[in-house]
Length: 479
Length: 110
Image (tube, rainbow over all chains, first blue to last red; front, side, top):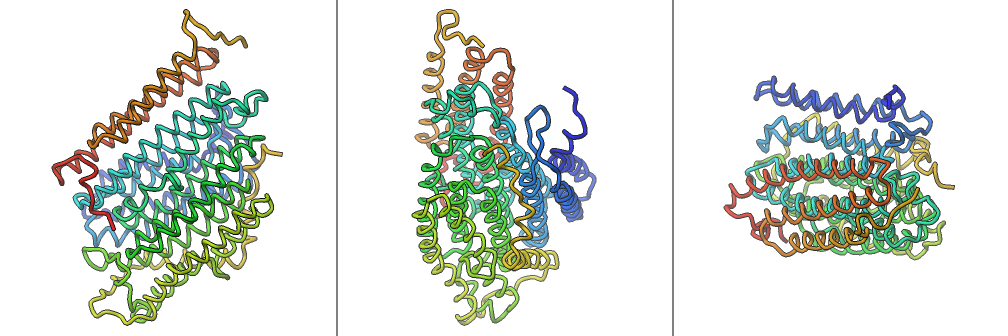
């Protein structure tokens, strides 16, 4: 098979990030140890380039490439843009954080870029083989990133736990892929279950169930979420921010590719299953978050709960609402983590507990405001993007007759207001303790926070801007 | 395309049975063992059972297309990459903690 230029264009964001990170690996050897921030800026430039490339390809029509192995549609390019932007914001947050915490390793940025290359492959997967490769390429660098604050034991613990559950989940994923292959005789997502006589095949049903289990681990959906709190708490905070946002987006991209892009006519089979997982995820995530005193751990449970809301959109078979929800959630969470890295990097030890934030709103009004805006958007209060995102997924659920799921979503959101508002209350109403350290100033971090907050408001006020970009490409094969 | 159910006197489901048995043993290993290396071995067993499945399906159902065989080769690569990173993480934890029991890692509990 000859490779032509349209094939390359189809996965241009992936190719540029993958080749760029290999180049970066070599460049990092030539950069002296005391100038590690050069690697960071090179990685940031790489991700910015990839984001611009993906953005410029948004308008191209849907087409398959490399013999049907990958597919290119507006949704895929939009997700590429989103993931590269999240990576860029993560690097901006990391610059000062790593300096203060003594993580002076250039590999940090290379592993981050490699993980992003895996994510940009997942978004284009049109074949179960590409899906598996993308998921492994995004996971394996992340295992190392979690443990990069070695020899801090909590970082190593986080990495080992993430690795063991991640590898375990891969086992389920590939077993499910093997059974699906056995039932349909092909690995392609477009033709696999479309063959008329196989849709009731128990082998196919078990296969799809196991694929769901494997991907459920990746997006931390209940009951496959138990690794997430420990991993999120122990990993360096900027890695946690990246995992809670980009990895979640990529995991959902995989789910959308398999369920919305690849199983036409089987909606009635997977919908009840996904709806039940969504309900359990919303309930368990929010209930567990209520009890948390550690802000990082609370955001871990919050990310589980928000995976539940996105799953509502998946169950309702509405790709656009899921992608919109994830975009809003990603920028909101990045804003929250920008505040945690600011407070956290003021000393060697991180200030993760809620008491450390008391009086923040008075001593540092801007940081306090960013934190409050993030919490309001996580609750879903207008005019933030959190409100519009929830509105879209619940509306999609009602349109598909899943009214009980939408009602449950609204109820759990009301419950979530308690623990999010508690953070705002501590930051603004409680007297500040004298011991509360002031954060070290960092221009890149301020830029990252400004980008996130601007996105929260702009997307909350003019959602049409984003909706036109996402398009409906991923649904192209379904009637 | 004709799909033989029996090749050399062995039906397809025998392979599937052995593979599911291997998968279950691997699953048990991951869940029951308290040694990170033994858990990693369990994962490898799960991945190998998948390879058995893939090759059996390929040979019995669709031998003209190389997809199943190629997928098995990719699973090797994934398993090797995971093992390399996993063993490095385990060594790193052992240097700090002098133990590879994941349950002894309990810094992160509320």
